[in-house]
Length: 418
Image (cartoon, rainbow, N blue to C red):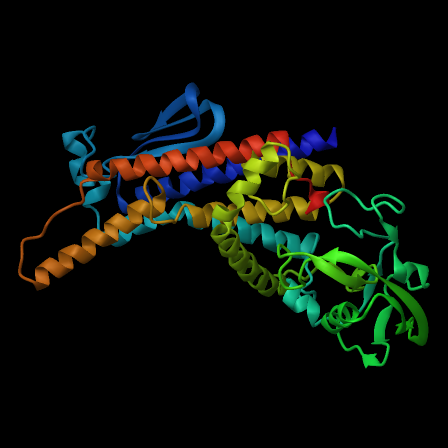
């Protein structure tokens, strides 16, 4: 029951955020004197509507977004009443049109910031002292998590002692425990986790002495390293080779989440926001290379937890988070999705908001250049000539959306696999 409550709550939260996106366009357009004729939540047949002033407000049956109609967004709009021509959007200064078109994305960013501040005060933000990537993890103290099983022949199925050659974890067999800190392997001192992994892999399979501390007490034990298939440490997708392993991974006793006071939460929100922003750009750059993995997950392969998800997948993750009693995960997914939508909408492609902004500034730059060259102003961009490119963006975007939705239905990602 809690799962479905979470699914519905997350879907509703996204619907509200998209509706506020359109409200951002509407409010700024009205403030500048542009005419907004319609503002609706949803698509399809109308459930109800009412008119207040010059704007019709309403709700439609399909809750997959919303829209607002600003009169005269382009010079080619042929549905502008002659009396409204002076208030057509395309006639306004480029800076005003930029604010109107960017206000939707700005709304998403503001929602993400509010959610981050709320998380910082009430549920906690990820601890900034913890490593955020493999490079930082290598520099962390060599504090270990001990595994009960070692997979000898690398594969996607779970490790099971006695199956497919899998063995009991050598570190566990030697009496090492999770949270022990390794200080020496053989005669090599260990200062961080990167040195630990490098030193283990440089050893031949067989017994080697480990020095470690547990609860502040120094001790030693002999670990019988085994040979197993592993990819390079700096390239998890690289070619596997036989190396020595001990059946350990990195861990820490530092708390995963940190809460702040109302004032301190502002600084923490800013820092975490920059981290999410950077991660979003990195994830967007990797989208093309993730498409084959998405397709393969539909045809039977294990779903890569780093592949993109749709609103359907995000809602399922939100449901899992609520069912598992993890409100912080619910909030983090909501934050990440809003930042992604905000950035994506600013891409300089039609029909996205960023496409309209890019054209407005292109027109402004071209007019300035022609004036310097003492040539007649070439006028406005003909949107009809850009329709083939617009349709291509819609086609590619629609196909990608369909692909992610299908993967999220057939082979969904779980918060426990991320």
